[in-house]
Image 1 (tube, rainbow, N blue to C red):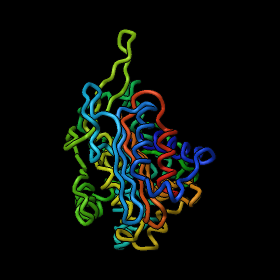
Image 2: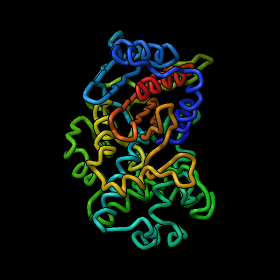
Image 3: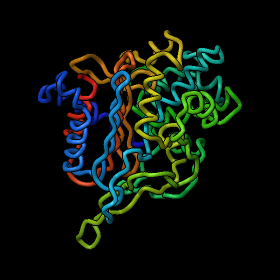
Image 4: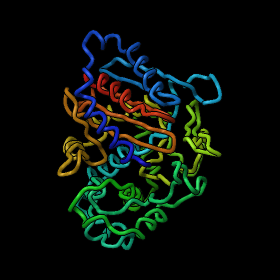
Length: 365
């Protein structure tokens, strides 16, 4: 859910790292398996409990894992582990909205007031495009929902989407709609409600029927109120100071309704890569809508549910995501021929530089 703070830093580090990190040579690319393992080991050495990744290049795939599944055991992190993907969820939500646009059931220029009357003040001036591109001016609903350590204050509470929007409505607006860009998870909570209003079904159902089942993403779940991460997974921790000593607190379990359509998905590296490959190879959207999705307009490198990252080999598209104790980065080449998804459970230090080395090497062979 804390996607922008996390993924903006990821993209920024990725850009900076390009001046110091050479892209993989053709020879190194042929040895991507052992290279991937070495890079993941550096991510863990940089302060993570675990790191798992999958790299796809054409019809070749490499998977690897490093670190431990839990801090108090020697059990290795599972290479096929599930993880909370955070704001990667936004690419799924945006894809459903754009499919509805393609079906003529709504338009990017439609106002929030038209579809969700009375939901937000000034909804007549906020368009669907504004929501998708974070130019609505709606403030961040999650402000104050975490304690200083990053643990949800009401960890097991079930939130409705309207309750989350109501939290945002109590805060001052950032700017008039369309006049600026600022990442806000509130935009995608509203989009989840929009999907339900247009289709008559929860956004969860639409994601399952339109994306998960057609693409065979068997290990991806939209968990609703369930606090569990089912299947093999690395546990997530945050450091908390108690009695002058830093101790790890396991935050793997929490009620993800606090993230909803902005960040609740649980997935695997393989499923996320398969999703982005299908998206960028035109299997989910019409060409004109995919082009719209990639277009950052006047924003800070953000399209319609996609983040953009400049690389030596061209612009990469995808999304980063954060959930308590989890960090995810998932990017693809523009044509969908190459993908990399990396899930980290950070704890101490800063694993970002090692992570960016991996991403740059994977996407620019």
